[in-house]
Length: 289
Length: 304
Image: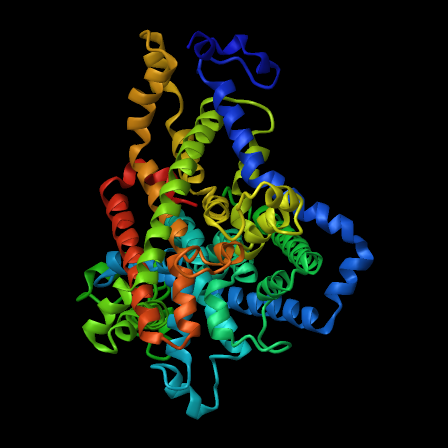
């Protein structure tokens, strides 16, 4: 215990500032050890395996028509789903923050349902709803809209699981937005529409973009809720994560890793772009948050 | 009221003329016309009910389609019970390990200042941005038959992949950040004043931790455990990659749902799924209860 409470005497003191708080070496040591064991070393494996393949090897796997189609579907559907989530998520967040209605508190809890509901359960439930004889599907089918077992189904599932990301990032920002600014805008003669577009929207744009990015990233990697409703036809409705599993089942570790690494890199690049956009909109609007 | 352009109703040029609606009149300049508010609310509610709640309701309806007898038969069936037991076992191992990690990491990060702190926080969040399938893949690359440790494990007859240890590892990976990311903002907001007071009164490190820090963070900790457990029990993608789908042995509940569903045994699939849906409802209920009762203490945590 003496070693714990005498923090300044710890050998790692060059890493930290002097403090009376005990347990630095023990807690940081365990944290880093566990992090390396569970996360960093296994993840490094993906990159080592990818390095084994080389650029030619990766390109060979990724450029095959089936993988190419799967990657296009995963990223394309995720972009559409994230856009839908940004629209509906903003609507839901706005209504829950600004308006009062019956059952608001209870309904607010249900927004997190896609987080709490296991993805496999969401997957089979959505399939049952949107298939030709399902509650929703039976009304869409006569209109010529097939959802289950088509790329549209992939978008529906991705939208379902991504919604809370947008609502939960926009909601707190909207709650903290200063109403005085809106009053000032109104007192200077702005119409309500002008106030919304020029005062409120710029303030919540960074949060909205963050929500978009989170929901997009989740949708790209999503597996459980998508595979049931997708139908998984090669070249048509087969998502990239499923292709990784198919390749693993064929013991094609190299192929699986190439797809995984490509997904990681594209996701990373897109998140980087969104982060830059966010920084730009933040500096432009001069918002603090 | 200018009927021609309702958007202009409550601007200053056109002061509110609705004395029978005092509430709206009071905030008229910073809200929308009544019909706008009503239709936006209706749109949001229809979307929430039709898109989020309908799937949940359909799980229970489909589960009971063949009657209550078939429902219970599907749940007490041997493989289903084995799956329930495995899911419980896995989460009983994974959640406590991540709780220990989460508390330790939050202690190191929030009670001390050191270099590379932001990097450490980013790395802890990393598993959230990795696809569940990739989370499973990384363990296949290490422990699989053609993986780095595969041949050695095989020679020594140690089973990790397609066995319980692999499932536990993948579950720990996907639930890794939950507890830590709930606790870090909370403990950051609380600072170290309480702990320093206890230290100055002669308490030792462990006493401070157990008697001061833990009581301070108990609700945030419970919140993190709740979310961590829900994900641990419901995880599908990562577990699917490492499990091998051996009925009665390495099938967790979500995997059992998949197998039943792919065998066109829909009502049984939905029966097992309804148990997971109830877990989700219980999680949401307890989570909301915590937010209502201890909202102040969780305030730092909620904004993520």
